[in-house]
Amino acid sequence: MRRRALLTAVPSLAVPLSGCSAGPPTAGVDDTDFRVVGDCPANDAATVTVDGSDVAVEGCVVGANGCADARLAAVTLDGAALTVVVESFVPDDAEACTQALVGRTYRATVALDAPADSVRVVHRGVDDGTVATWP
Image (tube, rainbow, N blue to C red; front, side, top):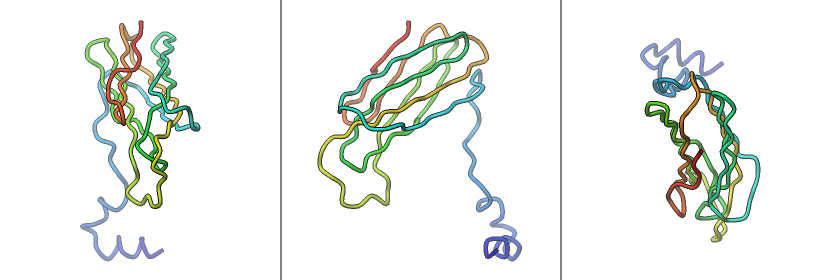
């Protein structure tokens, strides 16, 4: 209830406090989903599965320490060429992290307006670069 009182008392803050904007949607991309599903050996790798206009990526991105997590950094579509960028990051509130490389297993799905001609998966983390391509 305090949030509601604040928004009523200070109308100029209502928009910034009421939610976040994910930015403009990427043309040609209908939907994305990303989930970290567990841990994996510390090796950057990914596989791509394409079913019509649906693309699934499963992979392992390496983080710099035990507090590292993974997130979807970007999805871009250049013509019919899809690029999915996954990055490891350490949350700002992380404390007492182990000093060992860690792998985070993830699943990303991208629904496109039309089938992709090619897919490239890029990891940003301990080792940056392309880790998978399709076809």
